[in-house]
Structure formats: C-alpha cells, structure tokens
Image 1 (tube, rainbow, N blue to C red):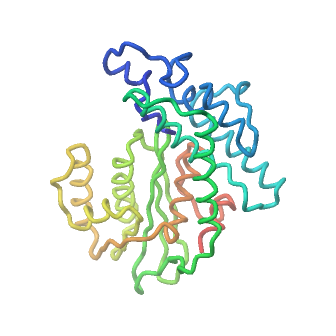
Image 2 (tube, rainbow, N blue to C red):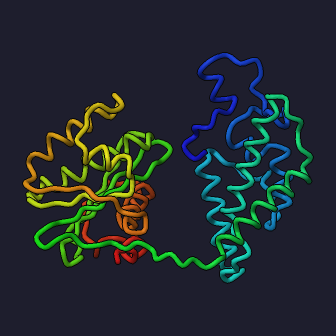
Image 3 (cartoon, rainbow, N blue to C red):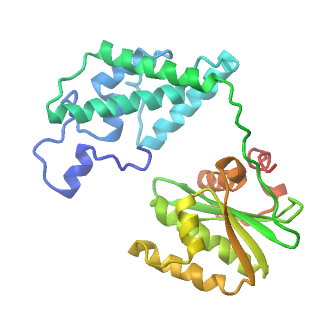
Length: 300
C-alpha cells in the first residue's frame, strides 16, 4: 500500500486498457489507493464507525504516506489521551480495516455481493478485538539480543528501509566488547525490497573494506538474502546478479569473514538508522553521539 503497488484500477489502466476505472465498490470516483481506503463511501462509513469516529472527508492526502502520517499523529494523540490504554490501537485497527476492505474490493469483480457496511464492520471489529487480545497476552519467549563477535573481530549489522521514491540502507559496526565503532547510511534509487536488501549487503562489505578490517562478521535479519550471500552463489535473479557478483569479488579482500542471521530485535539499531535516514532523506556517516536519541537509545 505505502509503495503504491496494489493493483487498483488507475494503475492497471497504465499497463493495459480497461473498460472502467471507477471504484469497484462505490463506482463514484477513480479507483486509486487513497480513494479506495479513505474516500470511498464504504470506507468513510467504516472509519466513522471506528472507536475514533474518524471523519476523513476533509483530509487532502496526496499519497498513502500522508495517510500513514495522519494515522501516526492520531496514534500519538490517542496515546496521550488514553495514557497507554491497551484497548486502543489505531494502527492495528487500520490494518484490519484495509485488509478486509481490499478483500471486499476483490470479491465484487468476481461475482461476490457487496457486504452490508454494518456486517463488514462487525467482521472488522471481531478481528481487531481478537488480535488486540492476542497482543495483550504475556509472552514467555525471551527476545533475542545482540551478541558480540569473537575477540579481534568486528560485527556489522545491516538493514534497508523502503520508501515511495527511494530506499535507504545502513550498517553499524561494533567490536567484541559491544562498543560501537562507526555507522553509515545512504540513499539508493530503488523501491525494490529485494534490490535494497542486496545493496545493503554490498554497502556493508564496502564499509568493511574501506576501513581495512581483516575479520568481519556480517549480520542481518533477511535470511534469504543472507543465505544467498553466504553461499556465494551468483545464479540468482538477473536484476541482482551483478550486485551479488560485486559482493563475491569484494569479499576476497577481507581475510576472514562470515555471515550470521540476526533476529529483528538484535538488528534494531541498523533498522532504526535506515528508518532515520529515510525520514531525514540524507546520507550519513556518523558516530553514536551524532545520532538522535530515538536511534541511539536502541543500541543496547
């Protein structure tokens, strides 16, 4: 949704002619992502019936990203009012609403009857309450934590953040004591998650070779990409094969190297740096003291 990849009618019409580009549900406006999930008559009724009684008619949203920012502001305001009330989660509700609304949109062209708004809202609310309840239940699973590399080694965590017009990649290097050595991030001209994740790997390798580290462990939470890099296989999708070949070639300049999988919780710092870079939309080569507290606070 955020990267505008859903096959709504206005995007399909760019690829091939279709007889009707109006909304599949209300048939009044051109069907695009914002119209379907915000301005459609059915969507407006569902938002109005939500616990927040949202009236979205007056919103002027240029893209799905603006809608996400609106929800974020609503979440921040609601958290202050409710003081952390666990019975309200606007992002969870929005996810369920958009998911079931998209399902309804897809059912109609295939002969499905439009669902009564009251019935659809009951289905949304039932799923929302069920998910909210499961999230509020205590978890007894210990969260994975970042583990240091062996003595004399450097561990580099890496990640990517995908935007609507570009993406960002990041890496953070720490020594065997867990001390942060350096951070790096940059913007890349792609919106493909696969390309961005592979570029993050090459970025981390470049980072290691530029600093002349001789023993490096590369760690990330994208297991498929990790397996591909660690196996040194180049017979992959053609549009990432050249990047992978570069990675294989550059690894030869590092005396000792290895790859390891990191759970998202253990990769949170690299993740936050990528998100921060995407938000600021600027390249950065920084130390922990130069990062915003919202990022550096997760370095443990």
